[in-house]
Amino acid sequence: MRDRLLDAVERLLVKGGVDAVRLDAVAAEAGVSKGGLLHHFPSKRALVEGVVQRLVDRFEAVLPGPDAPAGAYTRAWLDASIPSASPEDGDDSPDQVPIALLAAAGGPEVLDVLQRHYRVWQERLDADGLAPGVATLVRMAVDGWWTARLLGLAPPRDEAHAQLRRLVSGLIDQDVVQGVDQGVIQGGEPN
Image (cartoon, rainbow, N blue to C red):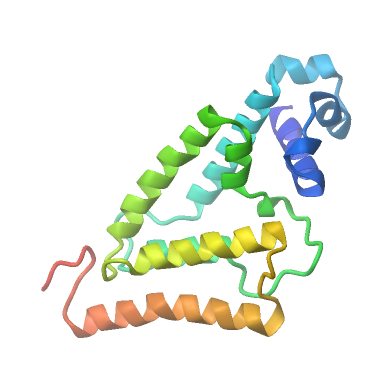
């Protein structure tokens, strides 16, 4: 039942943003009574927290462990966030729910949960065996891309999307190759 309710929240978020997430709307979207909803999630904030945690869990499930080769964590960050092909206008898949903006809309307590995750993720990016700043630059490019898409701020489409994806991917590839050429192993320690 919890997953059904969280699925409904995600659909409403994609369709109408955070303002569309009202308890009665979620119950109707999930096909349950408002009382059934309140049994699992006593407030809108609890719903938002549930969705944020589920999205974080999905994201972390595709990230490699700490023993991955140099650049693998940064590569997974890119692959999990920016699709290889340009999304179609109106792509309403639930995986496009923006975790950061959802967390911000959920209030300071919900945003704090995401901020803690981001600190851990950034530490992993910093320790990914790439030159200082490369993994962070990739993360910032990724965050900017989905923000532009979400807000309709002239996101890259078609060939521009593919070109941007190649450029960001090339940052990772180039740094991994340079690290190998210079005899550097994961974590930036010389051989």
